[in-house]
Image (cartoon, rainbow, N blue to C red; front, top):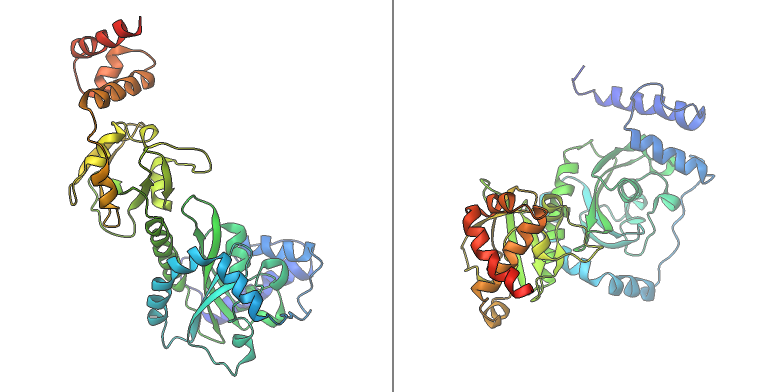
Length: 363
């Protein structure tokens, strides 16, 4: 049941799926292809597309290319180094890389392809629209719709014009969490290479991390769950301004902390410690810090932290830090002193002693 199907069996299943969904309009009777492919085919049908219609790509002017690249300059800058590395990884495979914006417009290309093969040269150009509505089911359109890495092979594309392609794709999320585009690896009349889905996803993550770093926040934190090693692309990256406001974060950081940067978020609302103390971290120092969820993470400065900005920060006042930490613990415990003391790791008597002056000062 778990054996990998032969290429012939795979193509046979795709043909059966097309007959059921596209020709008969009945929907899949068995899991012949991924469910997201069926959803994409149905969207194409809803737009009035038919598999036999020709996919045409309009000429793109130099001015259009320039405008597209200017608008997407931050993403292009973040992707440049990784695309160069990626082109080396896929050299000799007859696959090439496409980078698109959130609308499916190609903004950069890398890798080797046969320039005399129109099937390759017509899509490996900056400014070409490869959105699902224009080019049907492709890795590009599917990734932008599903927001997940995918693999797409030959007849899984909607239009007959595109059935020579095999594609892997992964979404790209910007430093504040929105989907800003995708990374595509495509080959023409090539052997199926589903492992390229992992490569695309890994490269997309590297591009996202580079983008967070180039934001140059006042403080760039690198963190992961307590007990895990730190120092890879799988770490969380979070950027703070000098007031502790979170200005950027990568996908891992958002997953660990539950961040939603579409709303204003502050470091003090994420880490159950005085946020000012994070600015006192020394290079290479690793600190274990609790989240307000009670889970523990380990934190250190990323090499891209603006050390000059940190040096310019005023030294935090110990009493202010302590007061802020107690206030947040009491809020989390809903005024229960015993619970707040437990969260802080001190005795109830000690906490009473510390909050008594605060209460007196409030009167």
